[in-house]
Length: 136
Image (cartoon, rainbow, N blue to C red; front, side):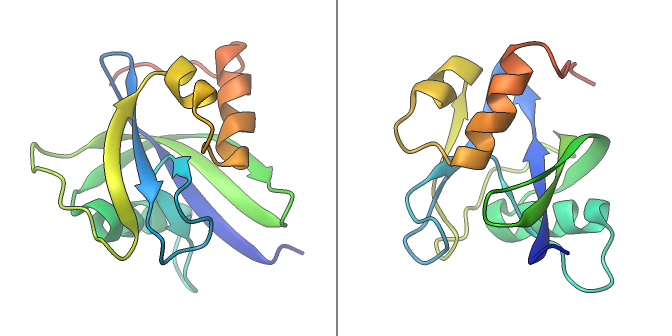
């Protein structure tokens, strides 16, 4: 059994991926990662992905495809989804959850000293061709 379940949004634009720097008020403060968060009771992973991106960034996303389900070293089951931004709404980061928003390449993320470990493991798989991220 897992301690929790969560979702991760993989949003690509022109070879760059949407990433956030986590605020000082959340678990793993200051870490760089893809947007996402916990699945609440009664939610599907897709519903959680939409809610979490809206809560963190003030944007609507459309889940496209689940790429992987993994379990972190701290026993959280993560659902990794490709997603699209649903519109051109500017980001409105929630300061309680997000300190900054970036567009980064895979290499920039992997080279960042504050990359969240679960994201590093996923990116290494992606870099080695385990997943194909196509624009939709």
